Length: 180
Ligand SMILES: Cc1cc2nc3c(=O)[nH]c(=O)nc-3n(C[C@H](O)[C@H](O)[C@H](O)COP(=O)(O)O)c2cc1C
Image 1 (tube, rainbow, N blue to C red):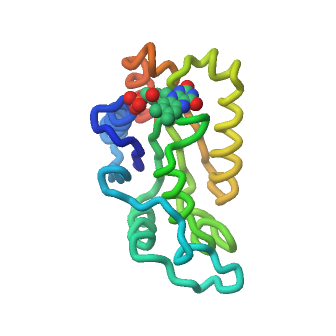
Image 2 (image 1 turned 30 degrees about the vertical axis):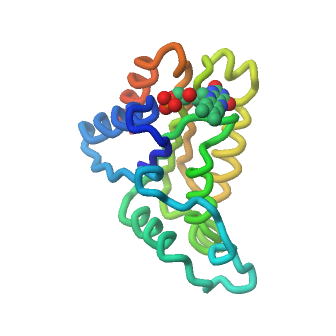
């Protein structure tokens, strides 16, 4: 599970914990990567930029460590707040750097068949659909990233109404963890 939120007491962290508890109760083991707490550097610099002519270009040590962490697990669950109809920069940068050419795409697929995204949304489900950003998130995350990387069982779950119904968000996260 990859969590992207700067505040430990945030609804995003509460939702992640609820998902994990329910998944563990269902027999899973959960390893958590807390990107902000761990200080992951999300900026893709020259060292990580794909060299399209050289698929053997080595990855940076911190990127390699993330790849190892993913490979020792069987599935990925991203938990994050929706910021500007998108994901926080730290998570976007984690994907930019770690889901690299030659590892997640470019002659290879992401190592996991199942990758889920749990997005905590401030707006209600009705406002999200009316604004159209449910489709934007689905296109960006499921089609643009997960399917592009060959993920066979992609899923985006919108945990809406964070502003008005925090307990509902936590309950929905627990339900998803139980169903995982
Ligand atoms: C920078 C920023 C951008 C945001 N953009 C959106 C948005 O586009 N749509 C939305 O519904 N809520 C948006 N929100 C509200 C967050 O989704 C909401 O604060 C979060 O889901 C609440 O949970 P938290 O306690 O984990 O932050 C934004 C919040 C921040 C801080």
